[in-house]
Image (tube, rainbow, N blue to C red; front, side, top):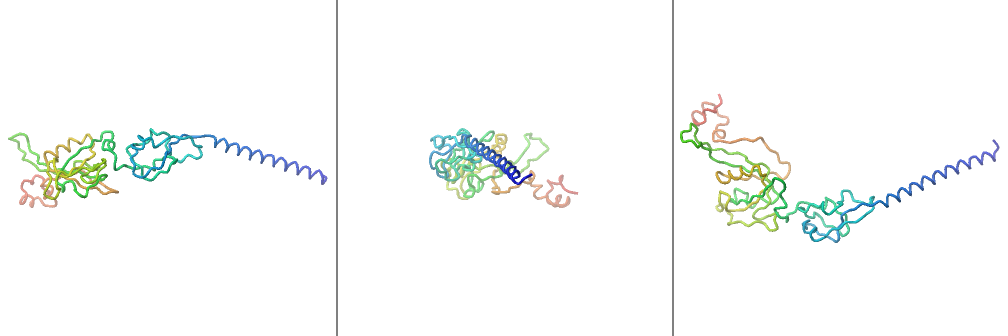
Length: 278
């Protein structure tokens, strides 16, 4: 092959490669252009919104609108319709005008009505007790408690072979506190019916420091029974990492007889002798 022919061949090859590169570049530009044309509907804020604003107030006031934005510019998780917003929440951060609305912008509201804080089979119940029974001054809205009860059980038959028995145990676990006498999820906190010192309030759920609890419907009868016919106490659960032991019932015999031998129980707790260890 002569020198001139070789140069021509090389030139042709380079021209083909260059043409291919141009075609690839053009296709990529066209693809990107097509992508930018595709749009998605998102919810955006009409104006600036301050943190802590109830979402139901914002929705009712028309603080949001929908807008078409390029699909490639959609913020991950952005709401696509105003109806999908959970109106029981409140803004967790300040929101600037035009911002795409995402779930991370909201949190549980401290000012949302009680009725919007319960769902499904949950029911809101208000009680009032002596401050010591409801952790008056310590318990806050949003806390979780266990409810313990104590009552005396006796046979309904006068000639029963069984004597009355006092028992105690945990009756409801992990109950959410919706409102207390000094903090509330409601627009205003509840008020205390008395001075709520160590000697004030009642033990039957009718007077003292008020609390509103979120109680599952199926255990409401248990709460009402222990409130009216026994002793009622709340125990505050840890804010994080709470764990539970197995259920148990305490009686005078289980409380004072633990670790004792049969002889010791017979001598000191003869009523409990049937449960003595041998």
